[in-house]
Image 1 (cartoon, rainbow, N blue to C red):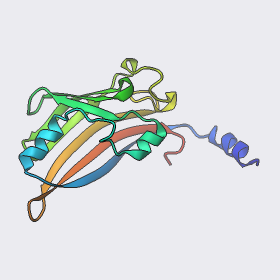
Image 2: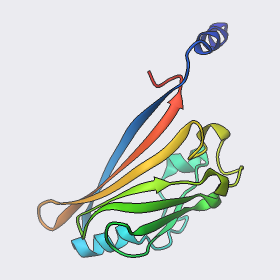
Image 3: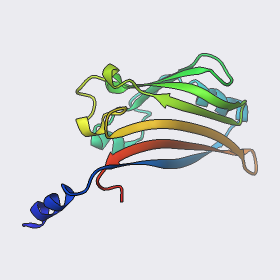
Image 4: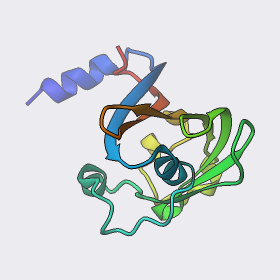
Length: 161
């Protein structure tokens, strides 16, 4: 019963540090690279029924709604829109048509309603930020393609050790 109290006393002596992490995932898709790429660069509206992210739902995180890209190529602007007023402003920094798109992500914490997330995980805030995203399309056998997504983010906590 005293463990949480003792741990909290010890934690107060550790100063928070900032670390950068990368999360990676992929999905295999049976479609042409052009069709896949069209859906990656410009995401049409995603209904709540289509969103299978059960963990995000359980935790109450905003879910993706759509993404709009103004043009293809380096310097393009993409806006990724989520529920609860969350918007990622993305600038394309590397682009290979039907193959790879890397973008810097900027979130203005003042645009996000205070009820969207807990203050400790406010994106673009003191403790958590999303920095960069990458989509990369890899050709596999038999017309199958693997779409890779990686997200680079930073966290400032006492638990980063």
